[in-house]
Length: 406
Image (tube, rainbow, N blue to C red; front, side, top):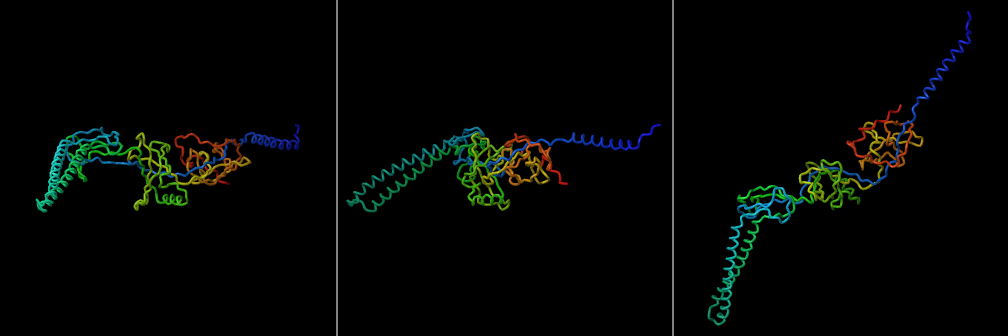
């Protein structure tokens, strides 16, 4: 039997592991993944303004209660409940006949007073010659003078009575004092209406103006102090002169599309709430806004400043801290912790932590890790993605946090 040399067994035992090791190295090199491809872009520089948002209600510029000035029976109604009316439109008519009779009587009394005045003036004129001729006594002449003065006073009183009767007759027609929308009628024709200048007079309807319309809201004391300090420094962001432009959106709208201006800030802070009242004015040509309606208003909260903006999807979260991944010259991703500002046209304002020359990963954030090489593709100026449901949510709800360092 032929014996296998021992030295050959040793050589074979050395060659086999080396061959297997070489095969493993080649397989490991063959399956090493390439650096992930990501899209990078530099932040956008833009002049922006921080805004504060508040909830408030619309109120009418003019709100009028239609009440009768004279008492009488309501004869007719000349409007449809809820319609738009113009200033001067006829709304109600009270029975005019008693007031027309009172006017005729006042005019007749005036004519009688004028006749008495004419007689007294003629009598006084004759008395002047008679008293010079000593035909009548001075006492008689004084009596004629007194009668003439009484006649003049009677004419003046009756003239005033005629004017009052004419005014009462005019008051039987109730007209709209302002443009606006009228409510429903409170009294039906045929009912007795109590008039006068007291609070016991009968209210017939209400009118609220529509265009323009006011929006009232309240803001806290800290915001008021911030606005006032900016105003003292010559940066009037929320002034009282009506020059500050504000925006508004209704409860079913996504964007602040309605423009108006701030025209009033109250002079007292409420003790119970610690808030102060502000007011803005908006045009309302289509009568979309209605007094009492809720809406959200956005007012400028800072002067204009230059900020860096990036897409909101490029921001990750590590618990409460926010970060972005930037790519250096060596194509290695690095995390930078940033301070966020508001959303502007679907781009997030970065207030601190980012440089204008940083190449930020704006697409492929989930494929990159800090300290890992990537294959960057330049996008140029990042553009805002189209608005989607949930857009504008805090970035903490989307990207993952960077891994903890070993």
